[in-house]
Length: 288
Image (cartoon, rainbow, N blue to C red):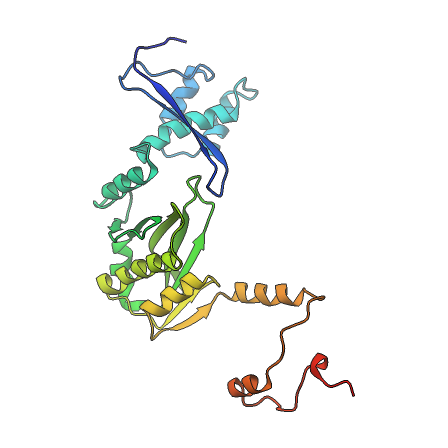
């Protein structure tokens, strides 16, 4: 393979503090030179991949097998070349946050990234956390007058940088509508309640910027999500995810060898007046 005087360097980063363990290898060149060629793929296969921008790797591989029933190259090599070409559409910087912000700027214009535009939510980052959020104005403008319910859901482990993603979903005519997304990552040891404050700023954008006023909010059992929803929409009824409620009850009932907490008769009657005041669990009844 040819070598070039390009002042190139290799940066290897081991992610020890993130949820997913990985090693990131970045090769950079200060001076442009002739690109390296894919020596493992035939030239006609390289042309096929370059000329199939709207196909995914599985679709391309099916076409490959039609031409090469017993290929000498692997599916991984096809995917690698497809990935290198595809990432040029969205990766504009080595730093993932900078690249994401550049992508949002591109998506701010009609047709920049598809049917809908995107608007980055600007708010002050909490100390010890890295956050980036955006809304979908076209979706909000179209359905804001019909939205009565909003749900917040989260997922982690969706990217190797270790960001947790939160989605704000609305309901209209029985269908779910994405209103915006927030990505959160701890960069150090943040103070207690930092994630909740970030979620509050995220929800406040939709309340103040778009006039979102819902009657019902939904979330899973995460206290940060529950607190943020109740703080920004105090008049809305908050409901927990039915699946998480069932899971919590089943998990607790599955523990057979742990004695439950003491039953407080006065507290129970104060909350539910229909309870028999003489009722006591077997374990708390006098033995004599």
